[in-house]
Length: 283
Image (cartoon, rainbow, N blue to C red; front, side, top):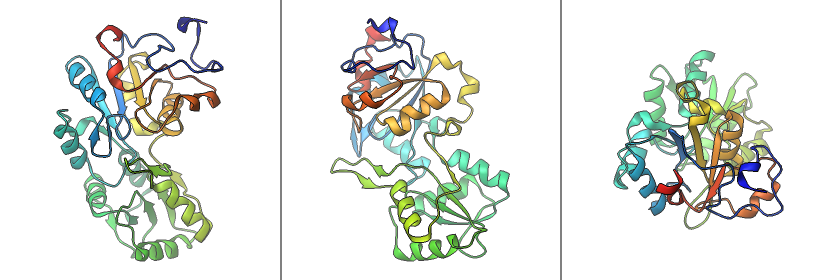
């Protein structure tokens, strides 16, 4: 069966096409690239060379947006990191769970919340929702983020708050681990399991990938056929693309392996070792 004969949503073949093999055509016509960061553009503090070269090569021809579920830092840290790699990113190109979270807080009238998060993310959330008062006093909600400064005191306070049925329980994203060159690290999904065991509750709402709301206004600004999402995780990146009805490029520079596709009902639009394989002849 040729790649042009396969339709998006078809059953995967017995063996998925190898890296660099087009699954559903070329990337010709894609104008908007939504790129996962860790595992796609870089691994920890190490740039994925081919991905950075691709972004820089096509910077003036395409619109790039950078999407991360990681809520351990604010936008300024991401901009600084991308610029250190030669990618001239601006704040308006960053997408994160903070955008839909802020909208939800305003819509729900939540003005007081306890954040399980580090100082950097607390500052970013305060900037996004200036009217929000962060602290345990009279907290209407607990916000669980990727807290790299987690302490038992934070666990104690948040656990007590979550035992009140009226306390809204919000999580920034569902990722169980955060990729790291030395091995995966516990992320919000792991924290969720801890709270479920301790207080018997799951979040009332989880933001970030794979919820399409994390894309903000992009689906209304571009035709879906002109957009593509690239990432290294099937459970978040690919599922986001499927949920949003947008083509997906699976990169093998991070978490996913070729054999992981055997359990997928829908094939990615394309699979590459890294974005550098989207060369001039393929775009």
